[in-house]
Image 1: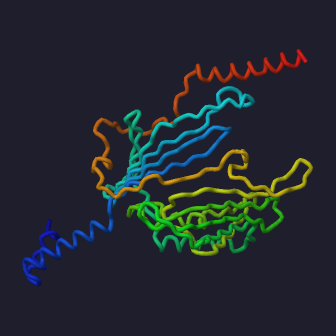
Image 2 (image 1 turned 90 degrees about the vertical axis):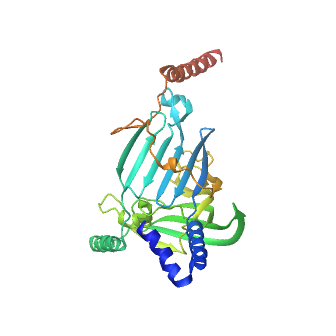
Image 3 (image 1 turned 180 degrees about the vertical axis):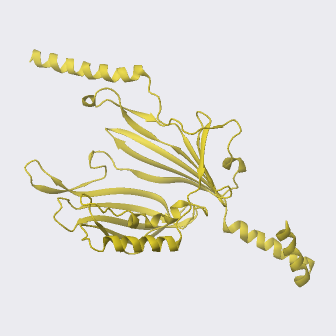
Length: 336
């Protein structure tokens, strides 16, 4: 209240009452425009064993607080591994609320009306980052790098309007290049995306220090590769509106020879469609304050179960299908 009364009084003495009111209105307008409330809806889809898996993330941001709602799916094997009998299972929705004013992060499971709380992990300060970098240099001074992680970021120059913002087309290629005869093979991952300059962070976001995570995560044992890093171009730090991924690798054939391969999916299932992310909604409408509060009918717990319960009858179906297919195959072979 003290600061609120001080500003009008100072302006009244300098500008007079009418001019002060105009100035206060302008200040309030600038503040409100500098950090509007945000709601962002993003969907990620990928395929697995011929089935489509869809995840949805809804992010709400207001000043010093953030709410993230996650709805995810995953393939669950029902029956023996050989049956290839999968079902797409919905994980219980999970909500994360970050409150910088309380210095706490709350994790909620709406289905069971339970939540957990933990202190906010503060981002690393520039001084801490420099200290860690110095320690890592001292530790690795006597080691020879065996794996180069090279990241090349290219702005294609293409632009288009998306959700009222000017989006830029950026392609990022991360290459893993063996520098020694360690048995490793080169691999690269290409991220093709459209980005805008929208900040979704809050002051206490741990992710603000995440850009240094790779540098402080260098392996040091003999069994692990010793990493070195090289960046080409300015790394993209904007909000991704559309991204798709492509992998390139060197595959080893049964006869020991190698051949280059390119696939959108994972190395385990290259025939599957790779993941694609798309933002479907961006809103700057004012948000309800209750979004960042813990509902009164929720109870605090030390831990909770996130994996969904799969009825025994559904699991039994997988086994029945597996043995039925084996029986059909056996009868077919006998008839032939």
